[in-house]
Structure formats: C-alpha cells, structure tokens
Image (cartoon, rainbow, N blue to C red; front, side, top):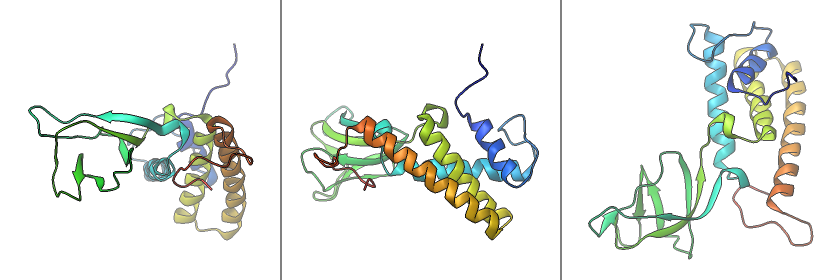
Length: 191
C-alpha cells in the first residue's frame, strides 16, 4: 500500500508553516497557534482568488437558474457562486448578494428560468492536484512575505510559484482542449 496522497488542506497548511521553519500542526482547526491560523486564512484567501478566475474544473456551463414560486419570482444563486456569466448575451444580469439582479429592468423578479455559466468556489479537497499545488505555493509565498518578509526566501518562492502556475495552465489547456490552432475558448483570466 502506498502512502502517496493528494494535498489536503492540513498538508498545505503544514507546507506553508515549513517555509518559515514552524513545526507542523495536527489539525486545521484553530489550535491557538497564531502562525497556523494565519497560514490557513491565507490559504483560504488564495484559494478564493485563484478559483475566481474560472477554470474548467469549477465552471458549470449552461446552468439553469429557476425563479422561486409563484412567478414572477426571485432567482437565488448557489451559496458557492463566485461569478455568473449569462448565456444568450444578457449582460444586464448580475449577482447581488445571493440573488440575480436585472440591471436593465431594475428588479430581482423573473418570469422564467435563466441559463448561465457559473463559476463556483470549491472546497480545497475538491480541486485537481495541480490547482492545490499552485494555491499552496502561492499562499506560502504570501505567508512568508507577510510574516518574515525575507527577500531571499521570497525570490525562491516566487520561482516556485511561477513554475506551479505554468504547470496549472498547461494542465488546464490540455483538459479544456485549448490549442494554438483553434485558439482558446472565451474564458475570463486565461491568456
């Protein structure tokens, strides 16, 4: 039996702590270890930032949002929604709080379902391993910059971050089917 496993939130926090020479922790829950709490907060912040770009693994295309009954009703977006991009070129539809807002008609009321491309915030353990790795390395660099501020360590970690990002983008291009010949699909943040 192999001990090889995907990066968990706990192992990511411990990797981040190791960057500044801190001892690992046994849980991601608040244990009172200030650096561990800060490392987890930065990991979660970085996770949200990276996922907000929208990737093949956290984008649901042509997702149906249904108004509440009776009609006209309010359309609520799922709790883990980072962004909504209406299909059918309805740019006047945006998310405000947890509801869909029609900027053109100034209303939260809808008579029919709306189809959207929805970018979701996934739990760390739901991400593909290249995303977990990149988020961990990026969070580690940010953590190190905020806690220690060493230019030498920062430069080394910036190189690691750049390599991890290239790996993530290469995997994304492969999985999402991007090619030099057909061009990339129209997606936020991918270049």
